[in-house]
Structures are given as C-alpha cells and as structure tokens.
Length: 483
Image (cartoon, rainbow, N blue to C red; front, side, top):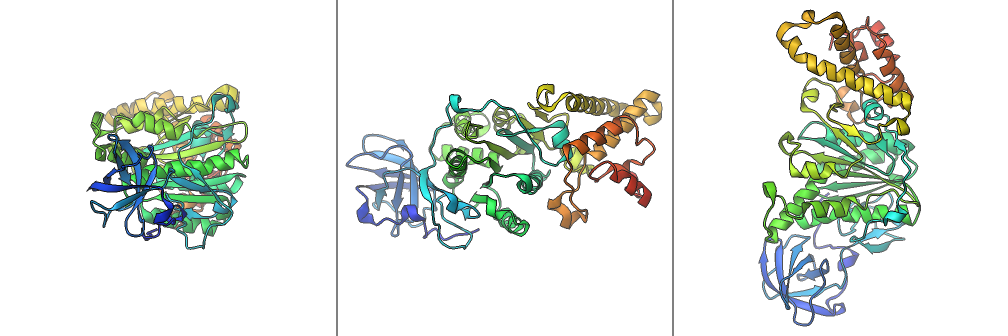
C-alpha cells in the first residue's frame, strides 16, 4: 500500500508555468504551512503545490490576513523550506469518477495504487459537494438483508440508511464489516465502495486480495488513506469516496453500498488538523467543529429518487466509553447502531453483538411486519430477563430460581447460542464453514426456541450453526462439552 510521494497524480502533473498565482513559503511547522501571496489570496480549500517536483500538496484552510494563508499539507513536507515558491492550482481537491474507476484501488489524490495501469474513461470532480436537497430525498423504508441472523432479526438495516458497528479495540468490528461485504456483494446488484480511513495497510492489502479471490472486484472500488499518511490526507479520503459514490447514484442511477473503516479515524484526523491549525480544543481534546465536520460527511449519504447510498461504518469507541463525544455524535446520524460487547466476545459468542444495547429504527411493525416485530420483542424480553437473573444465579445458583425463571434462562441461553454464526471471513481460523442464513430461516429458528422445541437439546447443539435444523445433525454427531 506504500507509494512514492514524488508521484502525485494527474492533478499535480502541470508545469510551473501553467500556474497563474504564485506565493512564497513563510513558515513550515510539521504539516502546517504559512504562505504569502502578493497578487490575490487563493480561496478556502484551494490546492497549492510546492517542492522541486510539485510533490508537496497543501490545502488552504485559513486566510490569516490580506496577504497570508495557512494550509495543511496532504503529503509529507520533507524538503520544504522558507522562501520556496508555491503555486495555486486554482481548484480544490478532485476525485476521479466514471466507469473506469470500477475494480480499481485509489489513494486520496486519485492515484491508482493497485499496479494495474493508467486510468481511462474518467472525469474529475471536486470532493467538496453539498448533500442532496430535501425535495430529492426518498421517503421509502426498505429492509436491507445481510444474511447474519442477529442483525436481520433484531437490528434490521435500512436500504439507503446508515448503520454503525460500535466497539473498542479487538471486539470484531473489521471482521463483521468484512463478513457483510462478503454476504452483500454476492446479491447486491449495485456498486460497492470501500473507504479505509486511518486503518492498517495490512488490512487493505488483505481485503483487496480476498475480494479478488472471491470474484467481486469487478463491482467494487477501493480508496484508502492509511494510518501512516498525514492527517490532512486521512481527513479528505472520506469526501473523495463519497464523490465517487454520488456519481454512481446520481449519474448512473445505481444503488451504492459504501463501507467505511473507520469513522472514528476521520474524527481523529479532524482533531489533529484542528490542533495543528491552532484552534482551541473542545471537550476531551476534540475539535470545536466536530459536529459540523461529521454532518458534512454523513448528510451526503442519502436515499434519493435516482438511487440510494447504503452505508455501513465501523466506529472505534475509545476505552469502550460510549459517552465519548466521537461515539455520541456518530450515534445521532445512524438508522441502526450495532454495539459490539467485549464480554460476549470473551464468552466466544460471535458475532459479539449486544442485542440489548443495539437498536434499529427499522424494527417497527409497519416496516418489518407484525410477526417479525413480535418475535424480536419477545427475544429482547427473554434476554433482558436473563440479564436480570444473572446476579441471583451467581449468588444462589440456578436451583434457587422458580420453574418459570429456569425456563426463561434456558430459552435465553439457547437463543444466545443460536444467534452466533460461523463467518466466511474467519473460515481459515475457526475451521467452520461460513453460513448465510435467510431472514425466514432465522425467524423460524428463534420462534421454535421460544416455544421450547429444543429444551431437550444440549446448548452446544445450537452454537455456531446456520439454520436451526442443523442442531439435529449436530446433536446426532455428539457436540462435545456444553457451552
């Protein structure tokens, strides 16, 4: 995923003589560069270029006075010195759009980083675009099926909506996101765009290899701003991905699946940029403009009369603290919040989704239907009762519970195990073949467990299976120790 910053894309290939407006570097402090322009100041968000080969790209973020601007470098600033000439490109950062970007991998400047040759059949558009007008928004509510039991039954996703995967470090956000990519792209007729913000280069390379092996790359676009890149680059990669998504939605009238890993890194990059620009930090060190910056990105993800952008976003939660401003601000934009629990992960219940903390605005009788809604409510009630009884069980033991409470505990434990699922993304580690389960099969399994049809089965017969009928085969084979 590494690249030479000496090669800076089509946007930087102009000769110095092509630039009308030139300035001079006044100071360089890390990624912050102050530049003096004697003729006229470049507008906010203009791209400036400096260095012997125009390899340093700077985005204007502030006009300090009548002659000076302050910008943040989107590339490393090694070699930049006071007195060097800076050239105003006269336009903001642009991203490539068109049929030619499909199956390719890009960085924030629109450079291809997959070693597959030059781009063809593309145009370039500004990454700074407005959200669709309210009059163009679609008001239909449709469920987006994922093939993952616990999500489809308890936390249905919305077509054209935004779903967040919340969790601390190491609870399975990226694995769950990868599994959703695998399950959805198979039956998703539109285009998929993966945006990696501030994540590891290894993860991007592995994802590219897996998508190529699975044969889904012809309908996918990938764009990365990795954690080794400057904050300015990481901050803009989400806007570049949305510009590509908007082209497929508005120009080609296709549905788009936008996968973002990780929205917290976008907020973190904004916090770094804000600090470098000298702004007074807000609560817990976050930038004072956190809400505005997140809204500018999230509000562009919308369902219109021409197509829909459905987004699934991983959100890192610092120190598992869901009151952190980054998590709180992100919650407000989502139609479904999927919370991953470290406690469930430690018990081996994967996906480690906490159904009592998670929620979806789609889980209403008018959208999912009366039967689905009634079952989901009963499952939540059973799991909540079990949660309340855990303290009594820990102190006095299961035997001290009433007969009815013991039945509730048995149902809840079987439901917990049935809602686990072997993933395609983890086949090589677990040795279990991945399963894709239809919504009808998931609902049928939960209903039968709630009717106590499996009370004579060991709990482990329901653990890591697909449809509930597999429990019979597992019981006949002998399923080992009880989970």
